[in-house]
Image (tube, rainbow, N blue to C red; front, side, top):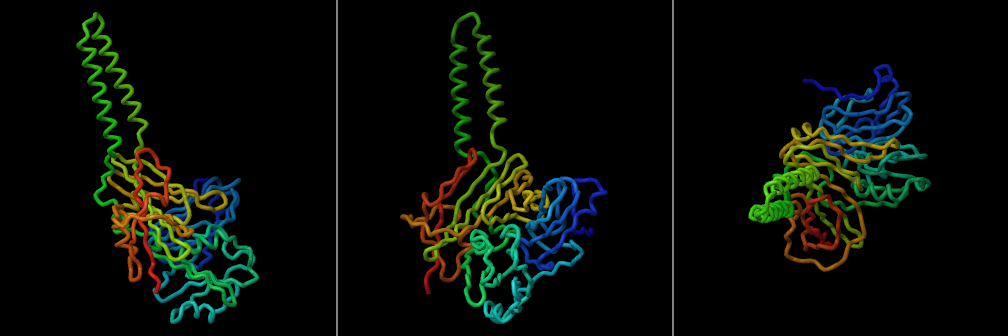
Length: 398
């Protein structure tokens, strides 16, 4: 069945013509990368959704039915047409470079032997919207006169693996270790292989202790010889049943496991926080946006079944992912940031399940696991959440 990429809007049909979508990168894309989409709306209702075959939908709420913003759209596989243009997948020898002033020889110096695909950026606002929206770019070449890009956005571009250069010669080339794109890949789920979202030991221990306590009290009441002991026993059972029902209702439907991989390279480090969710009963869930964030799925069928949506604010900045987990499904999220290299003693013996992920997706020549730590990153987790020790990887100097 042919499914075209479309715009789905929660508004009357007469208002649909009031929304215009354009592609600042001229339709170029790579699998698992975000691309920027410009949405211009006038009197267009309350919400616009951009989605279809091959992409994770993006939802944009409108202020008074209007918008003129850049939103990120995550392309997972071959998409259809949108905004009146065809999509074009970049080849392995092509480098997509954004310029405030086109300078092909300068870009060829960044990527010797590769083919440069130039994109003209506006000098007044070269990279509007979230930094992650522009991660399909291999490099951004700015003039020295451009000074209106916040340092935070430049750091986030580095976390995406985008080279940021200023003519005539300053170049910031990030050394990214590990995966650089969202994916439908079982390798990303190595730390949670065999996890069936069963309840953790703390929950099962609580159930057992409650059962033991109830049995002791019920036995004591049953052995007491007074006139209304049967009534007391009935009331006790009713109270215990009501308490158990309230406790069961308040339990989290989705369980979380997480941990970090820190890649040290000199004074700076790349910190990758991996968060996994699963449920034994099926449930809607969400994941708040943080840093540079990418979802991972075990298969394309899982992604389709989850119906994930990237929810943005009215300014186009990403806020959270919403999705539905079916019984037995797992979803993963990678949140990457560049931080000062953490210090502290390490245990050479690594017990964290993230070591399996590191061996599959991070290690290469000159990179090795050097230990783990419990103190480098401590997170506030939902009830019954589990955090693994931080795995530390080190890039060996040549």
